[in-house]
Image (cartoon, rainbow, N blue to C red; front, side, top):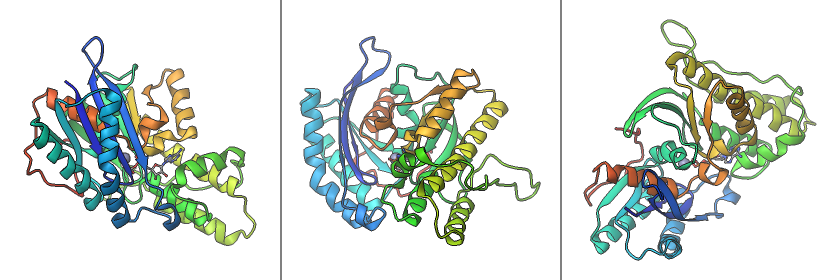
Length: 338
Ligand code: KG4
Ligand code: ZN
């Protein structure tokens, strides 16, 4: 089964084709085409209306390129992101995907963008077996799931305020740097002094028992960076990036290790834009080598938004017989597995 996947939920217009692996047991990516919108850089964040317009301009050519590269004229199934994301942006790819499904006369699957991230490590040669812990760290979400089976995901931890990627983007703006902030701070942090300032590692407590939960909070960390910048007129951007990044990586890894202890599940699949972060990757690989976790870490291009993850998730659902009607609507909020 060859599946065309279309992704337009944020600021990447992406299309990909995923088919059976040579042994038939898994999936392989035959083509993965991405157009990253640059129009948002000068605004320091994604402008929804500009995103929708740019998707409308690029979705046809991007999809044609993916089919041509894969050497496929007519896929067996069309999948498109149906949410969560910017509604206007999601609608462009969703409507186009549904019309292609009708035009080709093939089934349609509406994919949850977060489930696309969550399942994307299964495309890797060292894919985890079920059950596994799935850390999805992106610009809009930071969630740790216990993934038991396709469609069966328990949320073990999530952020109570900003997402990790969002915190990166906001700190980058405070430093007068560009958008998206993650890759910029990742590079800046290399020359920074990790002892320049002790930033907080915020803990979220249960409202009744006051016991620490597995959840994250990033807004206090962001405020601590702002206070540092206000108090210190001459501050090195590299030091800020390094201290901030160390704090983010510490809290992400802390919750993962505690969840692994609590569940006894040591397999960890990491995805989402922040999974492209060098420091997080290095820390997780150390834990893998030390035998504390069994980590599947997709290449950077598969961590940030892409079409392959949508085609792949669509393929798994189509193989399981989960198809959607052509009147499926877009959803701004959507918990995977619901
Ligand atoms: O998954 P993604 O491409 O889009 C969403 O679904 O949100 O994630 C984008 C986020 C942005 O906030 C960006 O700053 C962050 O991922 N990001 C990074 C890195 N690359 C992208 N954060 C830290 N380090 C990176 N290398
Ligand atoms: Zn994403």
